[in-house]
Length: 216
Image (cartoon, rainbow, N blue to C red; front, side, top):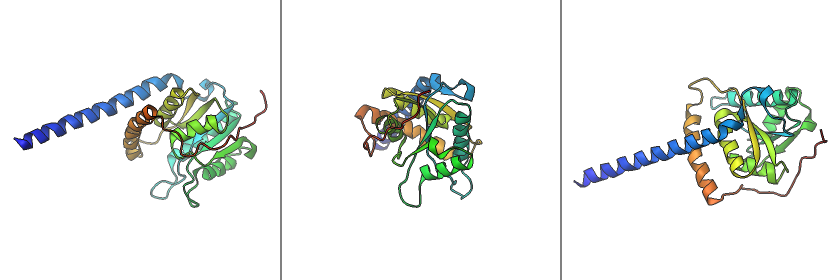
């Protein structure tokens, strides 16, 4: 009898956890959908794009397609005149791992002027990147650049915090390439809601370092 109660309790917990994950996922996708764009000519003009960091190399040591596609998307926005400047926000957890600097090198190699790039080394989480873009770098609205699944969460977060963010979706990766990433994303959407409900802020709020751009 005790074993049956335990099994029933475990089943109820699993069903409840699954329902929570599904609800968080659907809420993020539905709320962010009107603010995401797949074609560069449809993207509203913003002064700054926030390019979300990722490693330049995949686990096996080869090129990371998430990285490659995000760089191409940021270059597209600049060339199309949809943004004037790129704020690269990523993780610089130690000297040998520096997402913002790796992305800067890739943008420079693609022909982007260094004067059009600013680095945020404290974008440890998506929440940190969104809040710091506003509070540290002085951008009340911006275009987020990442893959659609990531943009959904980033734009949802930003808009819940009063930030006028839209997302430009970099091409996704082939099916099967990002299965582990997809699983982590589902859990991140639950964590997102917990962060919003508890009022969690960035790890390093930082002093203001506004990006000064010429008036258009």
